[in-house]
Image (cartoon, rainbow over the protein chains, first blue to last red):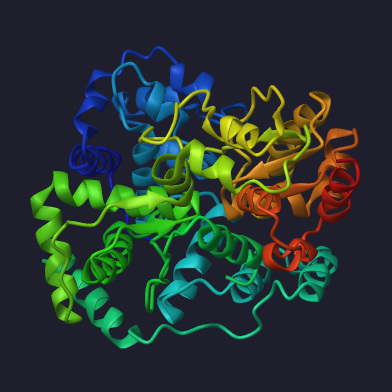
Length: 189
Length: 280
């Protein structure tokens, strides 16, 4: 885990959000709560979307990252299209997810983060997602026993030839790897 | 994709009937999906940009039947156009793999092509097996209408409702038509995913729908594959046939079950449509 002061975390976050188109509008939040009322999962969140911005202003963003909030965002964009201040809040949530992953600031057992990480690995390996591999990795890292619950569904899909057994590797895999190496190098500068 | 083969097959066959020429993007890669961009943003843009660059070489629009791909690719296009610095950075990465993207590709959902390029008159002309008042709940989900709102209303879209009426079906009132199905949470947070999907199925049934149609592979999977678990979570019967809008179109156009891969469905789609034909 990279140690990072709370103050820095808020600064880094604001800088990144301001680079998103319309991201600067986060400063114009009027705390109306339209985002929280529109969010399909806010009821299950420890901090609602409105409270996320309040936490940023109070310099306690680390508390949000350590809560279950950000990984409950399903990217439905309801908050984004309704926000009267025009804040692209879905992108704000993405930025929080990345910030938490980068600094190891997310609760242990955040299944959505494990899923996303496994997805990245599958795409990096093949150029496309390979679903059986994704699910195998996901369940091994979270709850292998729950994999058993999926066997019945897996068989129903297999019977209908809806599962591809072997992954498909794109032909341009090597070139894609070079592109990824180039973007990483760029990022490090 | 294997999991949603029926969407692939039915989209291609419906396009053929409508005289649309679809050419599979050669050696396409993952769009840089929600689950990828949540971890690595710039790498996700590279994934999107590689697809856009491949499409640009063909000189065609980039059309996808997946709402997730649609939003991700469209967003990458827009963000690169709005931010020349970002575009330059992505361009340098593409160059390392011998590619380039000039920013000239239009990203479109197949639904957009059907509604706007083909349109009502041509679709009505192709209907040889009208759907005889089949009561359909049209589920739009999130990402076909949000955040960009180019195809339809962001809040209460209605153009798929019109489409099914052109096919001879009836669109039942469905106020949850653009609410979230839960996406990947059906796997990662089943307690939440089942409730989100459950509300959709319950309301569709309560409003007397005989089936639900979707325009996104992940929505389709959530709505069709977990109906038993969802019924348990909701403590009510949530079983209802779920099909892609392209399968319903193809059926009205007289295409066979095989041409629409109806046999791949996990719900009772075939008996429902057979009943409708029998009752004509």
